[in-house]
Amino acid sequence: MTAKGSGRAAARRWAVYGLFVASASLLPRRASAEIELANINGWQVISDGRAGGFVSWAHGDGYPQPTYATDTNGNYVPLSSPIGGGWKAVTNQGVLIDPTLTGGTVIPNQGTIDLWRVRSGMIANVFGFGVRSPITPGTRFISYVQFWAYIENNGRQKNLQNVPDARQGYAGLEGPWGTLLAGRMRGLFSRGNTDIDVLYAHRWGLGFPGNLDNNGPTQGQLGFGVLGSSFSSGITYATPVAAGLQLTVGLFDPVQLQGFGGWTRTEFLRPEAEAMGNWRLGGLGRLVIFINGTYQKVFKDSYCTSVPNAPGAVYDMDTMKWLPCDETIAGGAAGLRLELGPFHLGLSGYYGQGLGLNYALEVSDAAQDREGNLRTESGEYVQLQVVIRKFDLFAGGGIAKMYLTDYDNKHRDTDPRDTTGASLAYKYNFLKDQIGFNAGIVYNVTPSLHFDLDFFRAQADWFGANNFPGQKQVVWVSNGGMMANW
Image (cartoon, rainbow, N blue to C red; front, side):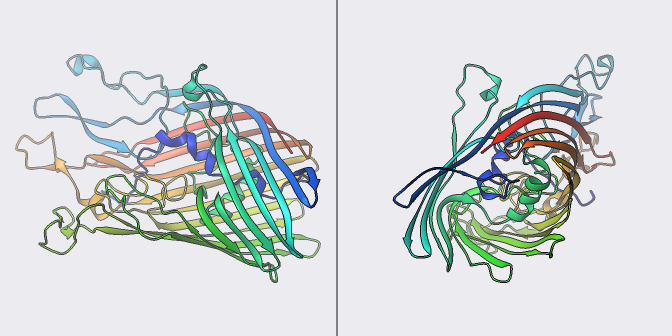
């Protein structure tokens, strides 16, 4: 097997992936801002939000089928199966192999997806509410709560309730010394990367839907070279801006990576940080450069030891190594935004292990192999936007790449094609990459009303195994709708 990787079970959690995009309240907006509801004795009450919907059509390949071979009895059996990544949905399938050759057993082919939906956008319907009040000259107390709601029916059933989600809620202090926040808020890792997608592409649109059959905000470019920054409980401190530079550091609730490794025990809080430079280029435009990162240790629950021959130690016959009892999630990301007049360019990338495929620190085959070893992943993304009067034209693309572990490269099972039972074959096709291209146009009727038409081409590739080529899936998506914000 060649170098490859995986992103297991991504499709089962698409409904929440869109929730991990940048919040409307935390991004600059085009000539629009929060509204002040009241100002009583210095207590300022503010609100912001958005609402809208989109018609979306997805058309393309169904989820790839296993590679079949004949066993020693002449029966067709799966030889290796694709895992990780890709997009499962209701599919129109045909027959892969003539049933007369399989003894009447129907083996379906990959089939096609052809699905119309009415969806939420990359950022769902949102209602935000906040209060500010001065404490001392130059220092004020702030609090903010934000709720998200889908427009799709839960499980595509009209009689089921759509429960609002308390996406953010924090309190803080801000003054000339900086800003301190405590509560639920955006993570710092991959924050600048996610902002590029929102600001220059899918803020008023949809992008790739993610879970084609379920509800929830969509992905935009997430999963295709961009990790959603995610929301988490934590405490952050941002320094004052000096010469255009600002450093933000935070401690967040540690994640569990259940999966195959059983990395459910954690100890310390997860540190994250982002350094950003934001400079005006005279009257030409603006340059923003950022770098961010995350780090966390995870452990196996109960009794475990990696000391050779000790009780509880496990030896892997495939890799010829003693299995670890702890792992390190770590990653870094960087990028820039360059605005020169009407031309806006965003570039970003990330690299690390245990990071996931769609959002930062995701539990999936993209984060670990089937023995629990954390995978290495990387991604690159480029986005262009041109602003012409009231129109935003945009196009971009990105790739997320997975890399194999030693276990992936070496683990094999008995080959059903061998009558002696001595030969071994790889059982899985692991995800190699996901590639996404976007394009669209937004008509900003007013600073608070936006019509969007956007398109997306999504492609997933799996590594070949046992001298068979790897599987491939391509899905095209067309979206159109409107969004109003305040």
